[in-house]
Image (cartoon, rainbow, N blue to C red; front, side):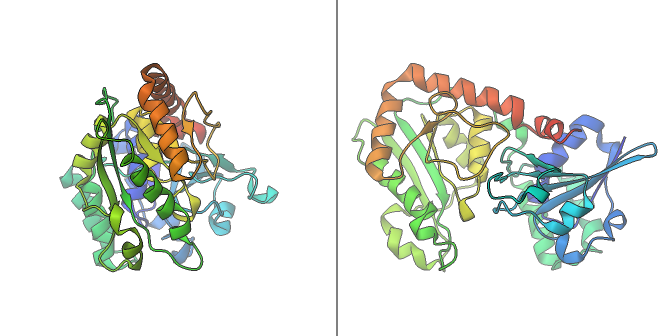
Length: 334
């Protein structure tokens, strides 16, 4: 089996699946190959989608993995491929004529999938032919190398009554209205944590870029940025974690990370679909979107250790069946 990968897209979003392909077939069978994808328009090759081809003798199959924030299907890539995986599948909103090839995947997240030498060799070869700005292209590789490895995403016993949450304060405008959605829900959670009293230790907040005009609206929730490895270590220690649909109501990286860590997840209702639904009280604890409802839900989880451990075990089992790189490949039929 040979696997050819289009190197044109953001390596951060491909890294999770490249790791799965390498683990399955070996480094020598997985290669970047720009020429195999030259029939695709350049604007459809830089769309945060991973495109790859498997070759087994005379048999060839084309795959797309869409990691965009929207459920909407790229029609050109859908027509090009045999299988179209999407981490933000929404069956109810997707036209019937775009469903036969569609596979719902769990949310993934960026990982350091290879060593720096291999990475910079691949980046150096890719940058010579990319249509993207060279600095931006190489920056994606650099950020991938700064990410934790997948082996670092393992469950560990949490600290009692400690909550850590650090997330992005997104730009908001008349189209995405993040200040009424994800930004506000995250702020409600942070504020709710602070109402739980001195027995519960909260750390974190919202990380905002210097030019984000929304920062003044959430000034009581702001926090500095923390390196991904430190953030991961603190998340492992957190008694519970908070999830909410993110930019364009997508499944964010955090949901995938929380699953891989086997955390007790407190979440507002999800907007998009997963391979199979997460069940409230079994895999995840669904809360209302008000500050008061979040505080009540946290109190319940914090005071019920057996329930918390049940959520942890069941979400990790779900991840093993549907979310890991290898499980994702199996869902795609590989």
